[in-house]
Image (tube, rainbow, N blue to C red):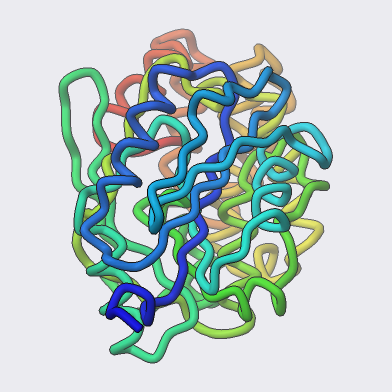
Length: 306
């Protein structure tokens, strides 16, 4: 048996919708990994027609194309890919992100050295000619840490997990409204079982652009915040975490022109954490001094979201 045959098979789930040019780049980066083991890529088309031309079989590099067999949306598409895959390790990659060549090899080595069943890496966010590195500055992500911090650097395109852990945790939650925040929910569930190891270097290039599906989905943000607060009582008990979520709700509401509801959410955020910056940004938008798209643009330029 060759060395490559002894390495664990990695299944990479790529959910996609109407992004053929970006998808081709993402697939090229996955197939170009320096990892010597078998990589199986499952491309799941959600609410769009699959393109069979992406399929290939190069021995230890395989691409399979399928349609979303479950609930429409990102969560259902990822679950379709998970259930159709066969690797001992499961990874995600968004269709507009790029893995750096050494991503899998370095991540798996670090993960095995730490005895971890799941890990994330840092990312480099690219937005309109600006590049910002976001790397979680912790050795491990715990559920306690996630209640107070969104940890934007722990991007789903960097997730790598053992099949055994995925089976224990279960599939991605398809009940989250519009799938907004499903990656955060997934990390909450993973860390409830055991900490998630962090590879503290940027190994994924995340391409943010104004066409990103969740750039301005304010209604989805509000509904997702409500859902997560109900699902995780610990979020309601952590002042910083609650302030962050209520601040997100306030900003999304004011972006929709719902000033009274936004003011109520902002007051709740302020009572929970007077230092929550979204409170003050919401006030600026409500006053008409700035617009919500301008705020999002400024946040994205700094490698951050709302």
